[in-house]
Each structure stands twice: as C-alpha cells, then as structure tokens.
Length: 290
Image 1: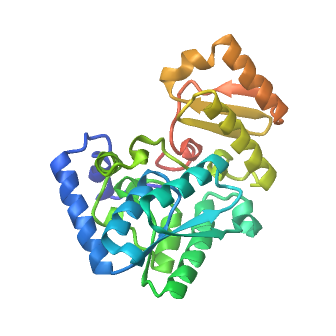
Image 2 (image 1 turned 90 degrees about the vertical axis):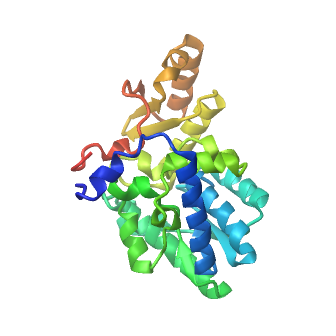
Image 3 (image 1 turned 60 degrees about the horizontal axis):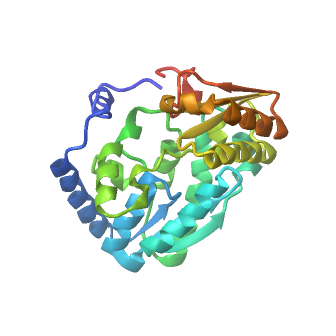
C-alpha cells in the first residue's frame, strides 16, 4: 500500500520518543471524546491498544463501556486467557462472542485483504451488542501508527461506522505504552499482538488445524522464556522470528534441539531462524510500499 503525502510525515514520528506532556494532552482529549460519545462497544483483544482504550473508557463511561472479545481459532489460547483476566481487573463489562471467520470462504482463501473479512465478522458482532445494549458507538483499537500500514480492516470499519478513538486523537504506540504504565496496566510493555492467521503467507489457505499448530509452536517458545515471537508457516518450514538480542540463547544446543524436536512433532520438517529478527507484518514484505 502506498502512503499519501499526509501519512508520510506522520510515519516519521513512529520511532520518536514519547513526550509525557504531549501524551497527557492526548489522554485528556481521549477522555473528552469518550464522554462526548456517551457510550462505546469496543472490539477487545487484551493487547496494548485495546486494553488501554478499555481502561480509559471504563473510567469515563462506567457501565456505558462494553468490551467484546471475539473467540475463534485465530486467537491464541494464551492471549485469550490473559485478555479475560485483564478485563476483570479493569472492571469493564465484558461480552465474549464466537466468531466464525474460517467459515467465510473469502477469509479462508487468505487473500491480501484477509483482514477485511475478519474485521467485518467482528463488527457484525459489535453492532449486535450495540443494538442489544442501546450503546450507540462501536469502536476498535486502531492507532496513529496504523495510518500508513496495510490495514484492510480499516475499510470494514468505515463500512460499519466503527470509530477509532485512539487514532482520532492521534495517539502513537509509544505514547500509549507510556500512558498505560501510568494507569497501572500490565500491558504497557507487552509485545505486539496479531492474529495467528498473520503467520500464514497470503494465498495459503487458513485452516483450524494449521492455526492450532502455529499456536502450539509459539506457546512452546513462550514456555522457553522467549517474549516477542512469531512462527511463520512456509509449507514444511517453520520460520522463527525473535528479537536479535535472543539469538544466542535460541542457538544454545539444549534450547535449539528442544525447539526442533517439538516443531517436528507438530508437523514441520525444517525449522529456521530468520536472521532479520522479529518484524511486525513481515508477511506483507512483498506488497507495494513494504
């Protein structure tokens, strides 16, 4: 996806260190926006952004703030459990819904706009909760960083009238982490999340069995103490992305042998380490502008 002239200077701010005063001003603007909205139904995953939005919305709107967690095969089991626990800690009203994006042939075929069909499924459920509760607005956790990225889900958001309050006040990830720490959220330094389908190359069909396999591979790496991980699926090859700082440890004989054995047990013939290290959205590398 090519970037507009407006988006290019915005993206230069991605790596800028968060200014506490500016972040606080944006938080005040977010609080004012939420009060003006009067009620909000949030697509909630328990990640850095949606957890922050849920926390601030609960503080400002109380019972008029509802978090909706979508349960499906593409949602890692560890993340689901953590999200449910955090919602209880935040104190926000929580609805758990079952989404069936894998039953949509367009999603399962894994085109480059796969995320459109996922978000479409999510927003159908958010709209239903909105109608049932009489709460007027549905929202999701898009942020300023997402403006120049490959985000087909934004199209679905526009079609369903979903708001992105964090993006509306131009909050960047670095600012959200800073503010989350101040609010006592344990997600302030949590690694970035993405659905398990993002581990599969576009054009390779998404199946429940494959998602389960990827979830178990990443679960094993987490159990070994690795924090930021992705296991990318390439037919018989599992390509591991971790932070470069952890390369030495993953290559220790006892660790690497255990990883290879477990991944082969789960169905992979070869296990590789990506020397570029972890990179969010690396499956988009072949798309224009990436």
